[in-house]
Length: 247
Image 1 (cartoon, helix red, strand yellow):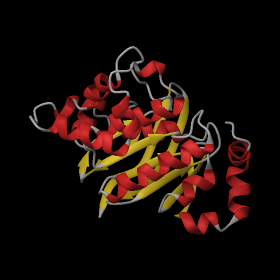
Image 2: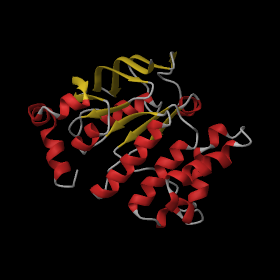
Image 3: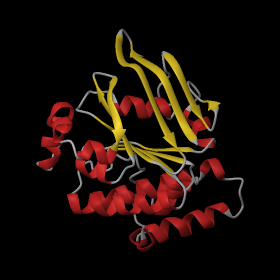
């Protein structure tokens, strides 16, 4: 069953068109990747889906309701959480204070905050050890753990993740993807933008490839992973950077 349906999405930055007729689906229980070289429109797609950018045309349906153009706080309230590129933590606040902000949309649930903390600390035991530590003093990997945990505090139906691997060592990225698979196994669908192409395909069910703001290819992750010519043709630049450990 479709959880997120994006149809014929156009986005403009002033006179510049960033997305042209982008369509994609995320079904319940799926992990879907969006791939493409730098400037292909990946982050713009995620930011539009989560309400940070207003579309010029097209529709975005979430749980069969139109959310295109709604403010981000309303989108979050409907069950779609966004982990942005760079995490956007509050560096001077503690781990626990950052997690409390992630819970804001569910604040009327008297037991939800405690349950959310327990779940976050189950996924990320290191955060429990550092719950009173300022977020900005932690390592990059620990900060990314906190970013994921904060996004999960509102118990989203869909978690949107932009560049999980940014600035992190491959081993840390693999550990984070293992956590995301566990989150998915518990029922949360995922829509991921990721520079490590092979890792994204190995950890998702389906994928869309963007080029110059358009979907140029889509299919099962396994089929795309088994076709090196596809990766070379559409993702060669980003894949080469990922293989070198950079952007």
